[in-house]
Length: 333
Ligand SMILES: *[C@@H]1O[C@H](CO)[C@@H](O)[C@H](O)[C@H]1NC(C)=O
Ligand SMILES: *[C@@H]1O[C@H](CO)[C@@H](O)[C@H](O)[C@H]1NC(C)=O
Image 1 (cartoon, rainbow, N blue to C red):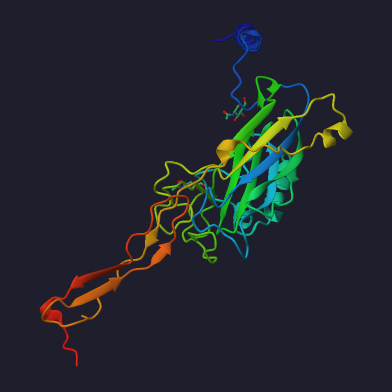
Image 2: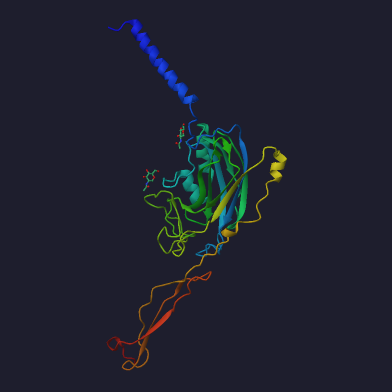
């Protein structure tokens, strides 16, 4: 039989153990941050500059020149915590990512972010104007709070079936400090919702849907793909972002006038990609020309699918001739 005294004693001991554990947990050596908590004391102000490096020298294959020429959509940026993802490589694209990647529309993405803001997973949303060229800048100011230290960004590649560049959950806070500057090269992704292979493919939904995947010089492994450069180990960066912290002392006025875009673009972004010639299959052999019994010749031809550029492999012979095989020879009148 347990007496009431015995019971309360056991309870007391349990309580003491729990209290001791709590004490040790908080007073012991600092627990390592798991990388997403931010213990910085105040917010941080940043300038984000997006730079497009999509030039015909770096990406000569099917470079879009008209209707529409190569350009970048509005940039969408969201500050958030680990409970929100704007987009996620390897996962299925949501409705917001789909309409943005296919059409460049931000409304659905904004709706999802606003919904997440009600649950405190999202801090703030930002948009910039689009860039009417493959090469150019857009920029925005960001204000990050310690409870939302992650930054995600998306920009659609125009024209394209459902391709975009972006950043997923970049942590701007580390060890209780806001980072001063982060520069990242960006590479294309496929949202997996549209089957087009080339920049100007007509709209054709992928069924079943695929997940968001990175586009490389080898994948998708199909010669028709606009980014397929079998000679390259990796694609040159098609864009980059630079996120620079603004000094606290700079007032609002100063911060706006500091808002100067970089003139010098990192030279390695001026890559020149060789593009090899691509030709069609041979036509079938033509009829024999000349006297059939002695030395008649026949021809076959092929045509250029893709002209070489930037000292890529030149095109091979487009016409070939061969002696006639006597029994396939047609008598000419
Ligand atoms: C980091 O820790 C917090 C709580 O301590 C947790 O909610 C969050 O999911 C963790 N994140 C990761 C990426 O482990
Ligand atoms: C696609 O993403 C979903 C989650 O969004 C996941 O459950 C599924 O396993 C992924 N499929 C592949 C092939 O990775």
